Amino acid sequence: METLDIRSKKLVLYILSSAGMVATLSQLIFLPSITAIREDLAATTFQVSMTIALYSFALAIAQLVYGPLVDKFKPKTIILTGLIIFALSSLGIFQSASIEMIIFFRIMQALGVASVGICGNSIISVMFTGVERDKSISIFQMFHSIGAAIGPAVGATIGIFFSWRISFLILTVWVIIVIAILVKKLPLGENINAFSFRAAYHLIQSSNLLFLCLAGAATAFVIQSFHTSLGFLFTDYLKIHAGWTGYAFMAIPLGVFTGSNINRMLLNFMSTEKITLIGMTCMTVFVGTFVLFIYVLPNPIAIYILILNLYLVGSSLGIVFATVTSIIISWFTDLRGTAIAVLFFTRNLFGTVGPLSTGYMIDQVNVPMAYVLILIVALLSVPLCLIAFHLNRRKQKTTLVSGSEITVN
Image 1 (cartoon, rainbow, N blue to C red):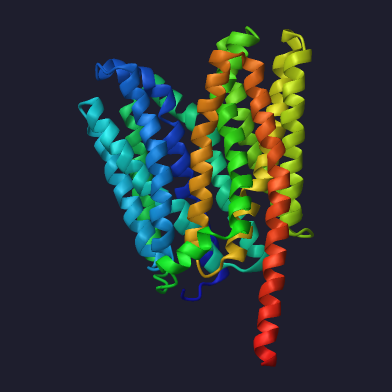
Image 2: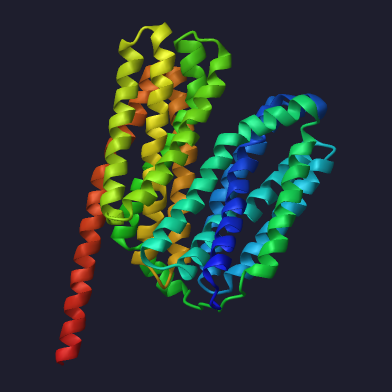
């Protein structure tokens, strides 16, 4: 990639990050409009639910396609193509006259915006090195969290004053602006041409990648399970007015925003591996206290303590999200796009399995047991990280020994 001055690098970083914010915003800005869409288009609840489920499914599958593409072709071309697809799909939803059209364009939205995470991290890893790279990835992740935090509120506000369709018109205009800036400021870069099916096959057999991706998937399981089960906890179990749930939903994303800032401070004097272990440990502890408070706190007090606890869960997740990505990029430099794709795919997969499994627990057992399940998954994250780090050190030692033997011969 052509050399950029510091100011241009920062501009590209924040424009890429704003595109990342669109990815989460487009997923959550939709939620407050579900009922309105169902009524306007005479759709069934199942059909409207499909617009959410198929979006998540398409997002997960697309990661596996974009990863190899980034390792073979110019990331600028790929991300611009993805954003154009997203912009056209958002405009299509704005003009849709049936629920079937919305389902189709939601799938296309996901297929387009999936390019942002893979290409964004790849571009950032080339523009920056060392600690600056890790901090930049943290900023990129932080913007994702901002999108998650404001998404429902933005969607609800637009729904009050305008039609739900305006949300998608705003997304269209936003992405067109991002595209225009990236076309001008983002260098074309070079074809990495590192991808091959043989190399990808060996990559997915890497045990250190597998265990670290599973640890990252555990964090996705936790955050998505919390998001989907909080309404049941507050309204059904604690018998608290539904109006409080809006504040509860914002607590985790705001915590992730804080955790991302803490992450960048810790990077000044800690390795990414240590920061990851600290974040995973804190996540486990705070999920554990959340479960404890559900059982022991009386209802009038519970809401305040639980929302604070949710913020702490989010903060610990914010510490972890960016470092896991940074570690994988540093481990698999040549095939970073494919490696990141595997990470994002497992995150999306577990982010889908989490709500389904906790929802089943709520239906079949009770609400607190759903959070016990979340705690069990959180407890697995630290051992999985430790195993991944041990396997990587062993792999590095083996590579070093093999290199020494070749040199001697």
